[in-house]
Image (cartoon, rainbow, N blue to C red):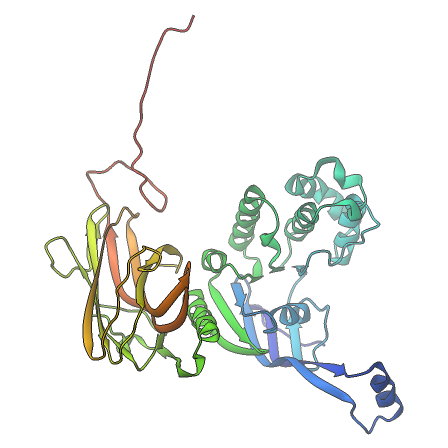
Length: 433
């Protein structure tokens, strides 16, 4: 499909759908060819009416459970699949790392595959030769570059595939779960390269089940469910809704769970909260009355000096009795990454049986050796724990119900990172003979 695209848009999808036909028996497909007026197929819509615009230089995360349509969407943008309906416009050269092995011939050597892939991506022989040493250094597979790809381990395979995808300077890079393979050093190198491409203005589409990667890399995220685009927003809001839906799906009584997306004006927090579209799961059997932050003098606060002690006070009104409720909290930085999370079950503490119409105040105390910045608190309440982080029912799951600032501790050492590890040092000197 062809069309005119403005300078700012890298990708435009208009009313894009993809339908697959499923046949109960192979003969049914033949019957449909011979009798075109009769339909013997069961239709499966992998994508339904997707409207999407991605601007040049955006890094977009795509999130969804298995079967939600993520890979189909990427394949349509990469032009390896044709949509059943709708228009797809792509502005620039696309480099796609869609699945382990796509675009590689197992009989060819690694070197041959590099040149083969480069030509498919539209590079000249001279372009690939100029890039070859960079690709070889990035993949770091040594002499295996001249061995047939069928002899590679999955880790070596993805190293070479990723090296080709990111070293050919694409206008649009599509990465589908590829970073899950490889050791920690290679993954760090991959993320660093993605950040470089992002800084260079490359448009990146990134599918991952690792929410931390999406927080770190993406400026925007899409949530797909059953082939439909459910939410297009900041990564924090999209991942919150995705996790809430997962909890609802895994709940024993999922029909009684209600998921709401609150605006900041509806927030239950007493602090000056500016977060929009917060995701809350709420059961009608428990009412979350308040979440407040207190200092060591029991005074309500919205900021704390790094390394000081803080208390999260949670007020819960139980409207029915529960035998084994558990509560927890999660602290996240401004991009949404979790810096700490725990709950009473994981702490080995029981709240115990709670009677109907009783009020419970839970107070978590801890030190905050975090780097200066803004943080949010999310809280959860569940019923009956049976494993590490596993519960029969979710009663409350409320994101960003409170926020606080961590200020620099001028009496501490100078440090950077996420958390102060309070290092100590011993030094011994002696003459060397």
